[in-house]
Amino acid sequence: MITRQQTDVLIIGAGPSGSSAAALLRKKGHQVVILERQHFPRFSIGESLLPQSMVFLEEAGLLDVIREHVDECAFQYKNGASFLRGKQRSFYDFREKFSEGPGTTWQVRRASFDQLLANQAQAYGTDIRYGHEVIAVDVDAEQPVLTVRDEAGTEYQIQGKFLLDASGFGRILPKFLDLESPSDFPVRRAVFTHIEDGILDDPAFDREKILIAVHEKDHRAWYWLIPFADGRASFGVVAEQDFFDHYGYTGDTSSDALEQLFKAILQGEPALSHLLRNAQFDTPVRTLVGYSANVKHLADKNYALLGNAGEFLDPVFSSGVTIALKSSSLAVPLVERVLQGQHVDWATAYEQPLREGIQVFRAYVESWYSGEFQDVVFSQNQHVELREMVSSLLAGYAWDMNNPIHKNAKRRLKMIAEYCREGLSQEPLLRG
Image (tube, rainbow, N blue to C red; front, side, top):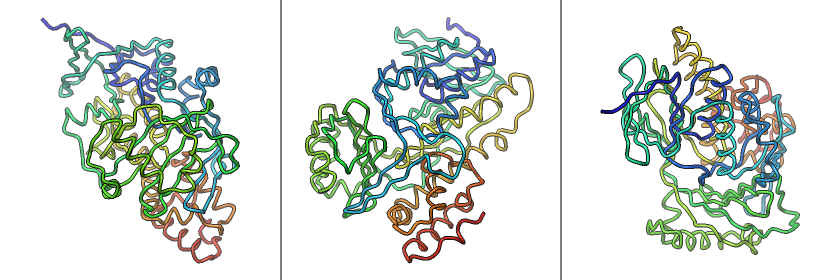
């Protein structure tokens, strides 16, 4: 006979959104169980944090544990973003921004980072069950019930007063509840790995900034280079399938085939290949395709989707962890109200404000691939205040609606790009 357990809040997934939500809930004294299919530490990308994340980590009581392990984990201090396109170079210093809040953060190995957050959530009293897989979901009753299988093959049910899906790309609730909605982004593939970067005192490279390099011949394709503090780096390329077809890629997902593909692509980038001339590819190369995702809705009366489980845009501006932490920060006070027997309008109180910032990120992602935002980034004709407003977005402050360029972001970006290209005064664009 299958047993049934009880708790206050059920969370699927022990990544950043799950651990931060658990930490926030435990600070309020609620019982929390996290069900995590994998074991930590485990490899993940999304290593370049944004300064806005620091606000949410501190709120959840998770920032100090990161600070304590910066040297041990070789987390790299980060103060901005650098851009490269052919011979064009540009950079933004996140300390020089429009929005209030932190201007620095770190670039982290997610295996260590996620483990630290999960360990701290456990220290606060969260019950994290690694190797436990959700195999059925029932949200029809007042309190949701999950059927779970552990690694020994034992199945049990667990009921909570509320359910949070922080399963990331696993997207447990969207799959079980038929919530998935097609993304309107083109299907893109990311190929990525960790390398010994071999970069020694190169004046063209700043380890305190993520480097985003645009492919010289296809501006829809771009690379990330995220340095860590021990001479290693996360390295990836993102493009649509026709770009990879040009290099004869057949879809072979073996590490050897992907490494050969990666090196062939890199050879066509003189500046980047010179920067990485001493790099050692010593870690299996991975790929992820069709990662952009959306859902019909983000919450209902007894569940909510956090972070990537709800919507993932694109890795270009490293927004994933920031959106994940923001979703936890927004959701937990509402979960508390549910636990107290209050009614919550999740569409108005959670989905709408969360999507406000996501839509700002979306406008910039779309503008990046259309080339308009690239023209802004590489423009030598940027008003200092406009640079500060753009820097705020790149630092993750997408929910700061006092930033004039966030209002009607898509239309305004078109105007900014036009003004930058034609060398016009940008004063009219700085008004709210």
